Length: 335
Image (cartoon, rainbow, N blue to C red; front, top):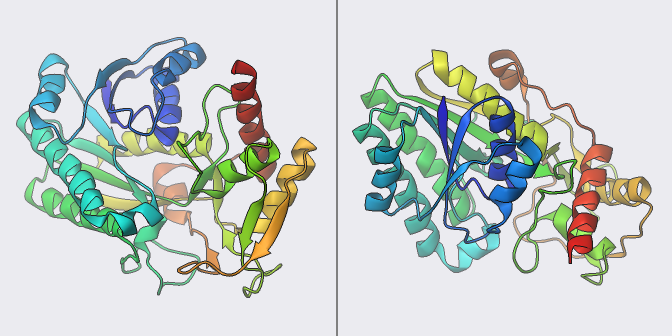
């Protein structure tokens, strides 16, 4: 079975490619390497023992994407490709709408032309918006507070509408919570360009001396220690969730959403303290004011994924911290 992975050289995509290859799937990566490294496919091959086929392209480029489908017999698609920085999406909203919506529409049109009817979509917990309360369940109304989040809401609706029109199509919408960590080999991890937007890569770079300190945005929330709670899950657990979603798509049609999370909230300070303890390194931090838009608690109810996908997150917060640090150390050793 051949799987096209759009954005397959990115953080979550690369880990998913490893799991796919180790399960015996044939893997084709389509990626423009905008926010990923050209050496990722080699790293995937080193871990899995098999190298994915790679096309360097923009998924919104219809003629080029058409060539990928024409040259390969593709059975299903896992769609990661898209811009993903919340703050940046507020600064350049048109670029986010154009990129994320166009790439998805072009992909769906090309899939339709080639009779490919199985899609796993990389959605997000941002679709729950600011008014729902944790734990989030898949039947809650969706909304967003930023253009990035709205692209996820809109794409979910596009997929529902398409499934209503094409009764043979299966779209599994995976709503991620907060993936962190890295592959235990140290060869793959979260290595964003510039200053990280997410907590764990920022913590790791502070620990490595690449950034001076971490700012904790607010310690006066109604939580255990006053800092925000988030549902952190290991990126390898998340990658395995995509295998479960593919298997589900084999025997189901229509659009269905699933939360991928642990179901437990971990505070910012709990995560920082775990990182320091597990790795034996200091993480200097200072308490700052609240950041606009941050919610006190965001965590999943993963019951539907447990029951329908037979998927459960297995790795601990200590595993996440240990693997993230191992990745940073490996990158530093490589120079």
